[in-house]
Image (cartoon, rainbow, N blue to C red; front, top):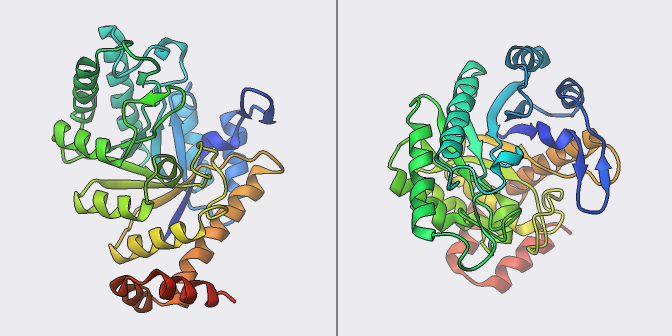
Length: 319
């Protein structure tokens, strides 16, 4: 497995929660300038439409970096018009607008050589009982993804699942529902973005999710970040779940993953260039751990199925 490192440009801009601001607002030009300073970076995941107010100028800025584009991130939540839903809005015009944005993002991805659009439909879902018609909203969602992805077969659409935020229950909360969506959409170019932080929040073992998605031929893209499973904090990879990250890399390597690793890490203290440089170094080190631990030895421990022996070996090998 050859790891290719990408950074989501949105995380180089303003970072804020309900209480305070951690990073200031930055223009797209300022964000790509920061990106060029990140050690080990090879690609950018750029955000549409917010970073493409002037499409030609944004494409020019991206190309000037000399970096590849791993994906175009389709944002269907930030505009106030999506407040009550995008692909599942009760307003047919808003659903049509969401499909049009997906198609536009696909065209930009093709122009940039990315061939991938990733989208996390966070505004689609519900907060209360008796708030929505679940059957109707699901049908609108499947129809919207299908209608958008049919636009062109040379660009893949990778839907990213997450259990909550801003909705208390999103329409695509976990790996299983994401695979169900893929089956119902029925297009070869529709798959899933696995975000490890989202997998943790969904009480999944991300290595198992990798295997399920890969077995179905639907693992299109991977985001790396960490959290303590209570919220999507977007922390540095392996800062909480060291062995889950090692196990995930083990299976990605075993299954011959050749896609990108994209990083969405919130910098609350310090400099985002330093945070993402550290992230890339951490992931490279985790990958080297597979060499140190030995892939054949790890498979032997899996086949044995004795946790005491496995963790004695894993921990003492680091001593």
